[in-house]
Amino acid sequence: MKSSQSYFKDCDFSSIKNSLVILDIDGTIVPHNGTEVLPDELNQINFLKENNNRIVIVSNNVDQRRNESIAQALDVECIETGYRKPDVRAIGKLVAQYSSQSLFVIGDKMLTDGLFAKKLGGVFWGVENLRSKEDSLGVRIFYFIDRMSQKIFY
Image 1 (cartoon, one colour):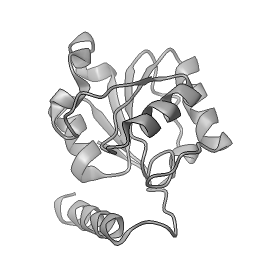
Image 2 (spheres, helix red, strand yellow):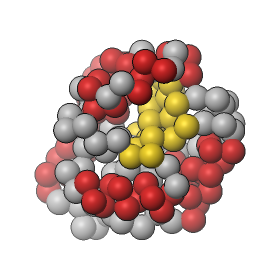
Image 3 (tube, helix red, strand yellow):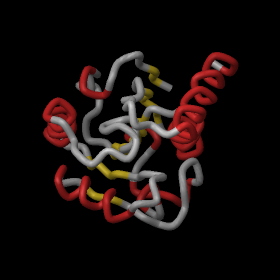
């Protein structure tokens, strides 16, 4: 696990090259249920692509149309299998093409993204979650539980 106290836009991803990068959406590149990726996040994604990485969005958000719209705006893939992270079937057969040294999961939640990376045998790059005043009570509670689990287990 590579944990960061930085937001996605502020991370130094220069060590990630020639890899499969599984990217979370909610709380990672936009606030929960957000639809617009800001320029700093877009620049980071372009930097990852310039380093010959394959970027694939895997989101637990059920609004598939929104997920695909964000992926299209970023010019990256979006995988929808009907499974949710941390279930490895959420990535389909794609993982078989990459070794564990070249597989990264970038996300804001240890309980979903972090466990997903662990189950895939990849590296979890945890980022500070993007928050919004519009976050629902359920989202706020999940963020709280996720932060407490990190303090207890890590």
